[in-house]
Amino acid sequence: PAGVACGELAKELALSYGVGLMMNWVAWTVFGNEPKDSYANPRWSTVLALPLQMFFYPYLVYKAASTGGGLHEWLGGGWEVGTEAAFWDRMFYVGLFGYMAKDMHCMPDPSMVAHHFLCGGSAVGNLFLSGGARIFMFGTLILEVCKSC
Image 1 (cartoon, rainbow, N blue to C red):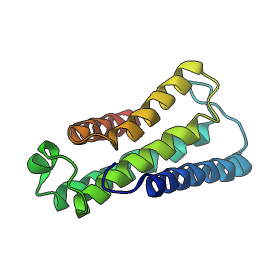
Image 2 (image 1 turned 135 degrees about the horizontal axis):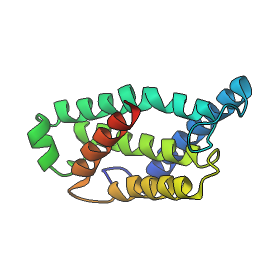
Image 3 (image 1 turned 90 degrees about the horizontal axis):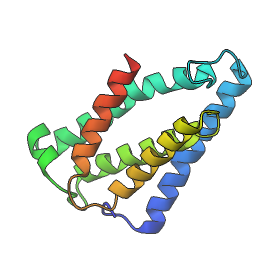
Image 4 (image 1 turned 120 degrees about the vertical axis):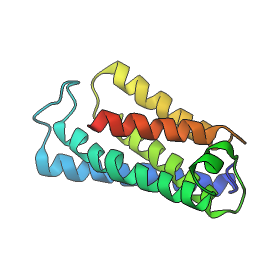
């Protein structure tokens, strides 16, 4: 998948999930479980999401598109194993998986847990596609940035 061995990909996904859980633990330790947002999640969960939505994901898409021949060429292309663009593509999905997985532990709303489970699963699934994954990636970027505004 995405030009890497399954074992290496599993390590990247586990690391992303672990970093996300550590971020949650630090935020929970510092800020506690109150106040809540509109979904009854701890407000710090939303605050942690903002830098990812506004800076991290756009940066990864920028890096992938700029090393993949520009936005139009990059969007239309598939995984080119061993290229720099494929590395940044993979990092986007690995990061998205960790972000979605970490938030499932602090969400009391079953519909939000289901949403994050499906999005995290889609991120992993896209790593196994030969084409079209970049359209999903770009759409995810737009939705995450708009959600944080």
